[in-house]
Image (tube, rainbow, N blue to C red):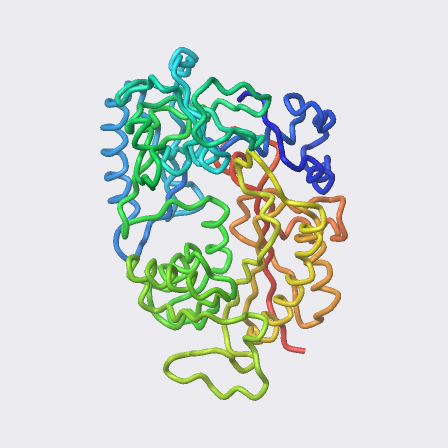
Length: 449
């Protein structure tokens, strides 16, 4: 990929260089040669799909995806990528990237400029939707091939008609124009829909249409997280920070849609979206509530009634999932990062507060899984170390299946405990496990004292 400019390059001061295995990290003023920029600004090449085993089987969905990708490969003139079941995750399908040539990524004369969020979506295989378009040449016609660039420096003015020349201009792929300039930029219009059909993203990521409710596009570490919780049919489970519901619906499938699965999130509109997803995926065992999870436990609460509404008495659940709010520094690609050091440092306080609630909710003999999509030690290994020192009733156990890497050695965890947790993230590799988003998972069991 071409040059990438981060709005706030100081964010890299919070990402230890040892996460990048000693690779040379030149200063933030030369992002083309900084491996941290390369990791953040590139998209994972592999696409992963979680099979909804409530509805179908891995074999059936594999056949459907194979048929769809074969048609797309023929239409795009590309070699069909492999589709296969993950060796450690029976409900996870992996789609390899397009095998494209340099010639197929040749830049076209016509250029489309899109915003940073749209550019990141294109690198993940999405089309360009109308609201994301910032500029285009006036003579560009529907049906023409165009090259798509993102404005990572956030300096392109909407409606630009001249070529955009800027160090933050990043090539993200080629596609076919599906809307006219007048339709996109005419006054008082609010266009929706596909503006550019992306035929080949610069990342090579394979675009996959997954038919719901048969499956769901989901990052591999998130699929691993549900497997680490490992609920059984009939269990009582709570997902404390559940929106948007991808992990929630996975837990429901692992529970074979039996037992009780409570899903909480503080924001009502997110819970409404989660309920809609659960209905689509036929996750009937889910009970979703808009509720502050820091207040989800009460010593005066009675045994839950038929609605299983919060707050709950201590020692209520067999399993607790705390996929905690975090700095999200593991998300990729991040073409334009605006998070500040102060914002990053604010997360551990809330994570510890939520963790304290989670400890109270889990039964003796039950498990608590803690996860984030962050890379920082303070939100991950340091939270685990704090938890072990604060709650003697907790025992750290291996977060199996151990698909990721061990915890970082340069942390407050001992070597033995580093082997029990798992990380996903830098440096880049050539497998779905080594080229995915940044993620962290730890599992605890509550013992009887």
